[in-house]
Image (cartoon, rainbow, N blue to C red):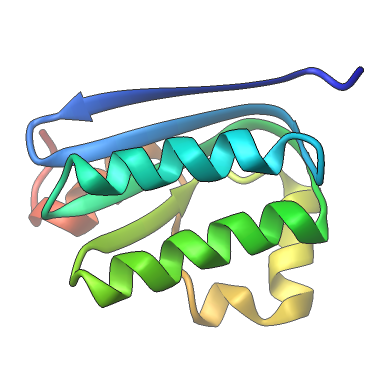
Length: 118
């Protein structure tokens, strides 16, 4: 069985979802639920920490895109950050880096949301 873990954290008005391991068809429902719950807990932004994400399949991308759509519908910002090179490459090939905001670090994502670091 593939290793996957997702944790969430609330930082003021910002929800942070930390993904760890392989995000694929078998693990995307867990991630989707966590990202949906994070969105319900904020009116400002959802940050998705991908620094420990080692793989993402089309199902995993679907969960992220669904969250992006839901965030847009609720006028909540979404940022991905900490992408490993091979995952960033997949997003670039699909043109998603032009759609979903991507930051290098959590600090950079927080600055983009707040105009200052927390």
